[in-house]
Image 1 (spheres, rainbow, N blue to C red):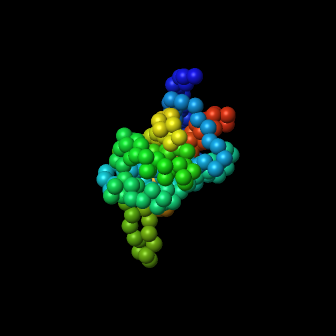
Image 2: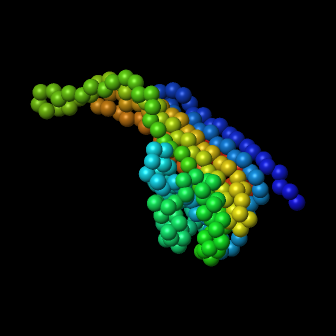
Image 3: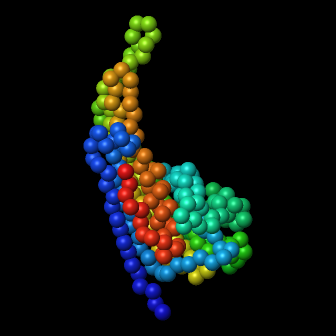
Amino acid sequence: MKFQSSSRSAKFVSAPCLVAGLACGGCVQTTVQEIRQAETQIGSGESIVILSRKHKTQGETEDDFVSCVSDSVNRGDGALPILSEREFVDATFPWFEPRTAPLNMEDLATVIGRPLISQRIDEIGVRYLVWIEGTTERTDESGSLNCTIFSGGLPACFGFLSWESGSAYEAAVWDVERGMTVGLLSSEAAGTSFVPAVVVPIPVIARVREKACANMSDQIKTFIHPDLVELPSTEG
């Protein structure tokens, strides 16, 4: 039976105002998208590994984002068995060491298509490889914050500083058993952080990377287990 490609997307927006920002830690809007190219399932003894590009270049996906997604997928409702990236790299040495690791999904498909590598991945019980690309960037800073020391050594700051942050991550899900990409996922978050100061600075930070991690983790769970209920409800 031929499986038809399908896609879905959702967008969640928090209250765009200063008061709401003070209450929830910065205004953040998030967007998730999914393209399914084949059905998915995971059996007993099978696991997932989450990888990213390891060459030290601009645009490299942050290690802590990959760790965040791995940890989140491995706990809570619908938790999935995870083989850590470090365990996977050690088990497939030297093909996924930083000097020799794939640079993109096409390179990844070539590497794991080699019989010895494919056999080794099967031996360690990995069913799905999730390849994540993306970054979090800070842009559009405005305003100013000036601090001084008054007589008596008391510090004080005055002003208003704000900036925009954006997280954009994409994940390709590779089925080792069938040797094919079974889906594409994306998680984006954008938000405004600000620091008002009248004597004492009060930083209100939009935690865009944390939101992107939470959404990506939920997507992976519901993608591998389609019977789990849908996307997250709202993001504040």
